[in-house]
Amino acid sequence: MTDKTNAVDLITGHRRMRRNRKADWSRRMVQENRLTVDDLIWPIFIVAGTNIVEPIDAMPGVNRMSIDKAVEAAKLAADFGIPALATFPNVDISLRDDTGSNSLAANNLINETTRAIKKAVPNIGVITDVALDPFTSHGHDGILRDGEIVNDETVAQIARAAVLQADAGADIIAPSDMMDGRVGAIRRALDAAGHQNVGIMAYATKFASAFYGPYREAIGTSGLLKGDKKTYYIDPANGTEAMRDAALDVEEGADMLMVKPGLPYLDICWRMKESFGLPVFAYQVSGEYSQIKAAAANGWIDGERVMLETLLAFKRAGCDGILSYFAVDVARILAKR
Ligand code: PBG
Image (cartoon, rainbow, N blue to C red; front, side, top):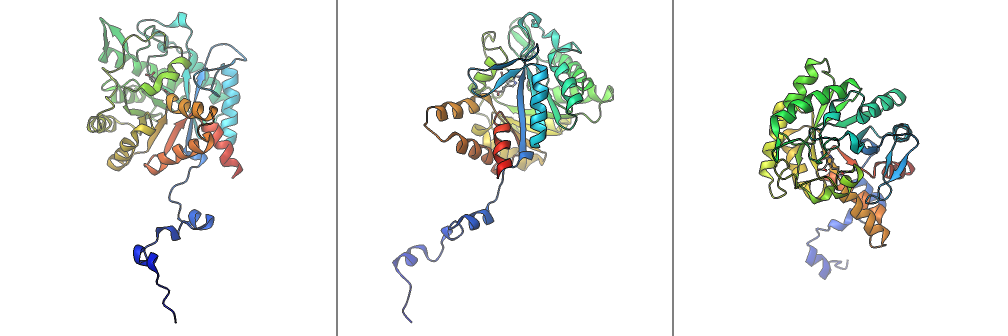
């Protein structure tokens, strides 16, 4: 018998990670995380009118849709098996004011959208954002008084708006405003109105991020916003503070937690999942979407592979699902596999 030991085996000491990677079948066998259609939540943008599908320049492939078109989109998503939609209204500028009073109109754009979708496509979940920014003339998420976004008055209004959203059929209320005490106030208001089964997905850790830029074009707040949102969103530098903020949402009764933006904050996703054991979702926000689209359009990256890789990264980081503008594109690819 000749000794087959060679110099390379001396280098590896027989420990070869590459054995499991040698073939497609063995790689599939050891794959730890998988993306499925059940992981996807699709955010959509709504405008008033009918038969409108209006491209958003800063988000190639994403449109603002009138309610009739949103219903068609909801059917498409449900047929693919996407569990839920998240709706964002682009409210007519004439309806926006200092306090976002249109958020308290039972038949406003977001609530009419929910009604139409729930009626036509009852088997898809509808998640509504209850922040005031689509309704305020200054683009802030709360009520502006003497240069300050006032917390408690905003919370009271958001809790009332949440009840109206639930009345319209929303399944999950998602407050993205980062006012203190909002989750508890929304829970109490929903319960008092008989909406015990309506859930709360807290935008538990929402960072003061530059990645929201394209979204503000989508809902028409980019030209309006004065100043920034640093007095209520979390500083991107702060992980411990983010955990404390999420812990308060858990105490106040959140059913699910969200991290926003997504990819730059995977550490927060992981820490939140480990700490609270609640379902954790990441929001792959508009800027994350647009940067992939832009690089792909220039031929600099393979857009489809990067899209799938980013979404899988959320799974690896412990997320139970992802809000992504890619949801339908991904569902289409997964359906073919
Ligand atoms: C505000 C809100 C934002 C997004 C959803 N709701 C951010 C903001 O404008 O401050 C961002 C979504 C995205 O960028 O995709 N309540």
